[in-house]
Length: 126
Image (cartoon, rainbow, N blue to C red):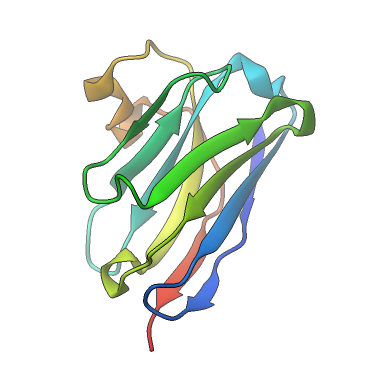
């Protein structure tokens, strides 16, 4: 599976961005998908996950109510809509596929994900 994340950039605090994750090489709807982020000097952090059909989602508390994860299986693409961005959201954002069971403790661990995109940088600054 190849994943290509895009959509990052520089945005002012309070602004919005939508990240995309285009998948190829495997039936996209076979796997759940997650987004993680990694700020300089910090560990990779779980952001959000969505199940195969898109009917279930799970979010980190730090972004709940501001970010929305979605997917379009017909387009083999996942999305992360980010609103009300804060400087602390600055990080490289990664998408990844997940083949395990839909359990919150498992979803939060990057080691449980199978394939990763290359990351896209989001910078929130005035």
